[in-house]
Length: 266
Image (cartoon, rainbow, N blue to C red; front, side, top):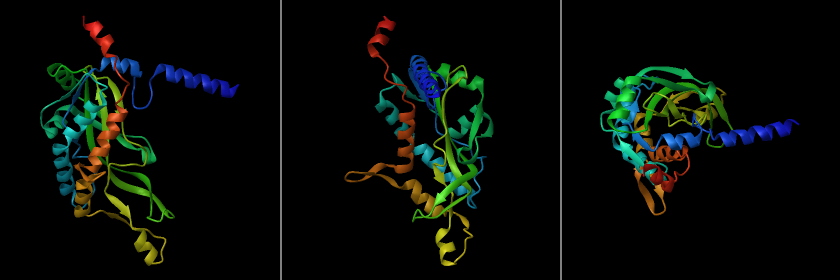
């Protein structure tokens, strides 16, 4: 009887079509969001970025937010799940000041993340001005949360609080309704700022593992590392390319029927 109830519940959820990051059934999302506006990448500079050279970290993140949005737009266009993808012009810092009115911590453990509250009037104004059905916002932010890190041998691990950079991603309708939201997989961060010093503990014959900040040159090399392709390095920074590929896949509501859309417009 219990197994039968679980099967019925699974079927109901599938029929509803509201799965994963979508907050409404996918069918409704397909019908509502045909033109997606991509807002310049945002950085929450006031979030918890505790690195000793904090300003350098912020500077690096801001730089890559300025030079990589084209990858995200290309990935979304390649997915062919929207009739149009429109880049909203402007400055990320200015957009953050205009759009974000509050933040709060949500979740527990390695699923903890920052959730944002937005200025409804500004969201509505952008939607009307650029004639889009939804606005995609990506907010890079820092947080300290509990995660488990393994050493290189995969035999030892340390569960502790680490300072990391995450990405909060949302699609918001012009009326302010959140239609899609994604905060990454639990325990996986966009850019770790700290690491456990397992080798030092091993060589000093101690169980006390110190947590250190990654150096600025180390973070720079991580952000600048290129994707790997069949015949060498690719053209884009690996971290951002992988992030945008993941988001484009998560933003897939299924294919829109172009024939039906053409008939509706006649």
